[in-house]
Image 1 (cartoon, one colour):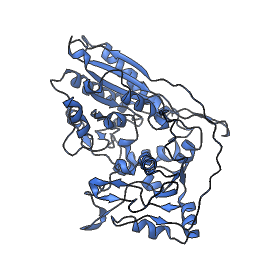
Image 2: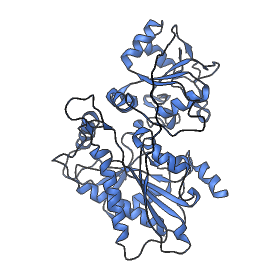
Image 3: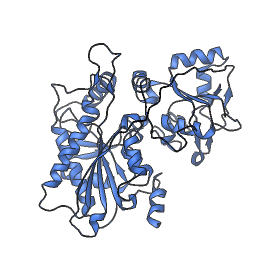
Image 4: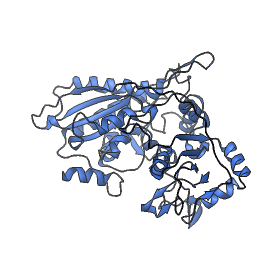
Length: 423
C-alpha cells in the first residue's frame, strides 16, 4: 500500500503526488479534495494561486482521483473521507456507492480501471496508518508541499470481492422546439435536468424509496415548465431549444456524459447548456448564486437578467464543495460548451442572514441522498418560479443573440472551445 497524498498530477501548478514512484499493481491511499495550501502572506487563508484557494478544482473531485489512478495503473484506489473537504457526510458515500453502480461500457469493458475503487472513513484511515507506523496528521501536513513524495506503507492489501455484472439500457429523454430562422435553427441551446435518483433500498426499514423530490424531481419540473413557456411564445426563437432530461446523474453524470460524447447535434453548433439540479424550496430571494467561477459570458447574461428582476448575482458560497463539477452541465463544459449552473440565492426576503445556511445544512445533513428527500408541507416555491423565469430569459437571449457565448480568459474549458471553433 502506498500513500499518495492528494493523488494529484497538475502541471499547471507544478504539482505531482506520484513523483518517483511506480504504483502499477499497488493499492494507493489518498486524501479527498485539493491540497489546502496556506496563503504565504496570511496562514489563516488559502493561497488562491494554488488550486483556486478555497474553491475546489476538478483535481479535488473523487472522479478525478480514480481517473488518475487508472492512468497510473493502480490495482486499487482508496479515498480517505473527511466530511468538510468532501462536502458531505460519510452516509452519502455509503448510501451512494455501497449499492449497485453503473458506468458507460468502454470497448475494453472498463478493464483498465482499478479493480477496486473505494472510500475509507477517517477513523479507519487513522487506524490503518498507525498500524503501518505512520501518523495521519503528519502525512496530511506533508502532503501540502510540492516536494511531497509518495510514502510506502508497512502494509499489504488483499481484496476478496464478488461482483455481479449486468448490461442494462437507460434513456435520456429529449424534446425540441425548432428555431424560426431557416439557418440558425440548426444551432442549439440545451436545458438539462437529471430525472434519476437512487431508487429503492430493500435493506432499509420502513420507507425504502429514495423519492428525490428536490434532487432532482424539482429540476425536471422546472425543465418542463420552461419547455411549456417556449411553446407559448408568439414565435419560436431563432435557434432551436433542446430540453434534455438525462439519466444516471447519480451514477457519475453518465447520461450527460453520453450525450456530450455522442451528441444528437454537433457540439460546435451548441451555444450553451443551462442546467437545473434542485430548486429553491424556501421562498423568494434578493439574489441568485453563481456556482463555480465567473468563467463565461453566460454569467454576464445571468447578471443582466437578475438585475431586471431586482436581484443580484452573488459568488458561490461553498466553492470548496466543488458543486460545478457535480452536475450534468460539467460534461458539456468538459467538451468546451459554455455551461451555466446557477443555484438558489442566499438572501431570503424577510429572513435573517443565517437562514440560508441553516436550511442548506438541514437539507445536506437530513435529506440529501436519503429517503427523506420528499415534498415537505412548509415548502415555498415562489423563489423557484423566479429562478425558472430567469433561466427562461437567459436561454431565449442566447438563442436570439448575434454571437455564441464564450469562455472567459483563464477558464480551463476555453482551449477546448477554441479548438472546436477552428474546425
